[in-house]
Length: 294
Image (cartoon, rainbow, N blue to C red):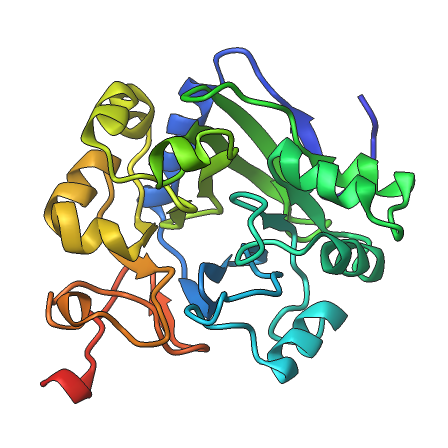
């Protein structure tokens, strides 16, 4: 194995579920500050100590319904300037244009050489088909294929070069909402334990199908999630309580919220992201309040 000192994958380990559970348990034993910041649509930045990750941050189409990343935030993100400095990894849930832009991701990785990309193979395929593709990027991309409803566990070494620590990641492929129309889409759930009190989950555009989640109960039960970022249709139906039970999550935050927030979401009492830049403390999260509906 390579001796590269920083942001290297230690490897996919046999019996990694047990190790991930250990990482998660120790995370809850010694809490540190950990927070999530909304970027746009399903874009979220999570940081804990010296570890920082991004979910679905780079995309170029909201289809007139979902919010885009503002130009100033986009410029800051692409350049790796604060608050998007020191990013360890970017996680892409799937390769739809409201979640991922291949050419822009190539530019981002080229401009931020310490960042790793964890993405489904379909996203990598789009990147390799782009005129700007550089084979040198492959060493920083994790894109192993997964069959539907299959999972894979990883341990990464993220964070400061002198104080980096194991970060547990579980990738699980689940159906994209929409049934047969999207059955070929490689939609990934990511569960990431960044550090103490900072296990998060991102569902992409998962279908809120109880049968699918019941079949994966052992995976969700292996590690307690502090905060799950779920598409808003999870917190309106089946509802927040049931979603938290499915995912073994302490708290959920709705994402993929349209620019015009649906009334049933706004009046549900559920927590959700809709204002770019808003933050949540992973341990002491407040419920979203939209005064226009009070």
